[in-house]
Amino acid sequence: MKNWLYILLFISGPISAQDTLMVHHVDDFPINGQANHPAWQQSKWYPLPARNELAKELDSRFKLLYSDKGIYVYMEGKDQKISTTFQNDFEDLYQADVFEVFFHPNPSAPVYFEYEINPLEKELVLMVPNFQGKFYGWLPWHYEGERKVQKKVSVKHIPGSIGTWSAELFIPFALLTPLENVPAKPGMVWKGNFCRLDYDTGKMAKWSWSPLAGTFHDYKKYGVFLFK
Image (tube, rainbow, N blue to C red; front, side, top):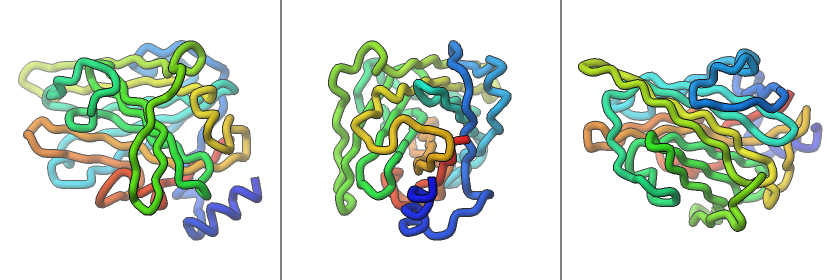
């Protein structure tokens, strides 16, 4: 653990407990899109702060857990309408309503994992090399079996009012094995981010856990995870 803390201190500066997301270990459990399994009680809620004016009226938040086999993510947000039209996996989902997850297990290497899911339960799965701000995602090879992400989406529409949509994910370590510092073990430190985009007004509303004013690919400013 100390070696990884030294790396993060060198890259990011001092790390405080307040800035660190604590990820608790659990036994594997089934997902249903609503995060109502008792295991989720071991994770606190983390807010997804609004990053522009369009996002301020729609609260968003997330939870995080891990097991021996992978990482559980739950994200939810208030929404006025489902405005995405992407109905196929591996399309440009970020051009419409979407939740995004970024994992950067080895902060000393400019390569990280990105996962996107939309309200229609369509996904975009990428490994992203990012050299001097030039990034272009690569799709996974043999994306099947134990390497495939488990995903469930729940949409609660309330006519005449604001509803919510949520996504519950299990991202297997088998999919992340091209990256270093995988699988996660107690005491390990990763960096990463959790983000949301929404286009209900036709313009981009954006949220992110790490305070990124520009692109979500500014990986040097990602937040810190500590696996417990």
